[in-house]
Length: 425
Figure (cartoon, rainbow, N blue to C red):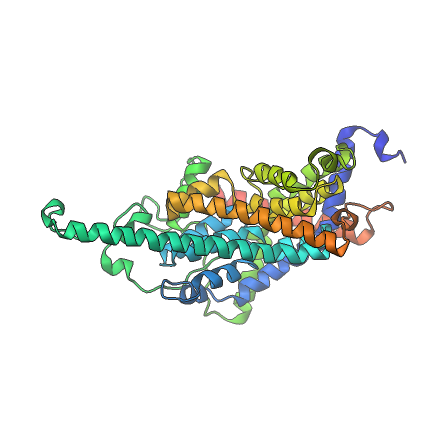
């Protein structure tokens, strides 16, 4: 057998990409199954009960709820929009928007497979801290804006002729529409995070977004109406059904919906990781960027515009760690990459307001950098090196179990993707 360095660069990339898939496949399959169980055990109406405006710890609960839920960057947008539509506060919605895409049971499993135990622990903790800071910041901004609007409303009441004696509904401003006071104060009903409320079609019945709409318009429109951001119709499951039916629904969600959503992104991340592993010289990043704050700033700037889910970012970071990426920069990319991109910021602005969107991005950036510094210090004090733990293919090559798991994972991704395409057609 010819050595790896002597073959064509494209073949080298394919070999390295396959190694990534083989290393991650068993843990990815485990994460998908756990996601199905989580869907089964998590009552849909629990969110409405705990994240409403009257909940004292709504932001904390939203952050804790978002950490294990395996929704990608696109899937969390309609889920958060559904929370807002059902009456959840802006702070709770922001915390959920941050915590959910940054980590999940599937990405935690892949982090353990491709990185190290310490990063596996740091990642969800850092996501929780970032979500809390962002959520409480947005909540503070919302209270401040409501105070300003209250003063403005009092001034308008002093001059009723200017408004024609009509009341002004300030709660409808976030969505750009108007709503009756009774509708704004309606109690929260059950909401399905994994299959958010479908939008209204032109005929007035629940359905999917227009298939001919552009990607950005569809994401914004579907998020505003509570539809799934992945482009396929949504189905809801009765939380009062039998345990067997709920278990079946949870497994169907994990095997078809979740696998179809994250599959293309994970494979894309595996190919990128394979390219970096095969073509980039060892310790290139450490020599070029160093291991201090500037490496983290570079990771932040690179991750902000990218549209990458938490699971797909993990193999990419693992490959970069082999080339000298510091633990802090790795954590920055793992936090900022899934939570910020152009589509997400646009939807956050339409959902929470422009000032809240600016605070959302700033909080994620500052928390990522601060937590990256903490990660670097922690690794240094413990005498650990993240690159020494990374396993993207051993010298003896992948074993039979890893190859079988990788083949099963690719088959699952292919079937789920085809089901989604046929469903859309």
